[in-house]
Length: 167
Image (cartoon, rainbow, N blue to C red; front, side):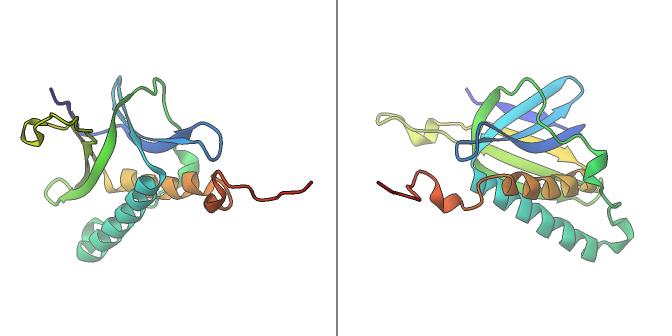
């Protein structure tokens, strides 16, 4: 049975981490009223999401100059993860869209499904989540993702490697 989640519109959306540098677990989290949805994603997925949101919003500002977003100040927003942080699923694919009539951005994510040897791939129905929000909410998310990524290790290539050795 697949999960289908639709938060339209969202009250908040964020990306955050749990755990020490080098072993952080990344979460995409959104909420509406008392419902909080947490999904697990990879660091590179988070980075790509932030870049894609920025590119989409920059393009929308050029194409629709009459509906440009208001400036975002991250200091005015609470973009920390909210409790409970219980992931619904791990993200395999991420897509972005824009509803011109409602002037809303949507993020659509699909669940990663690991098939067993005897599973029929045509019968697998991965979960899907859609989060609808304002351009300002998504601009803040894009800026926030960059800050979250930068809080990691100075050189991620050193993960699990011996840097110094002496006897």
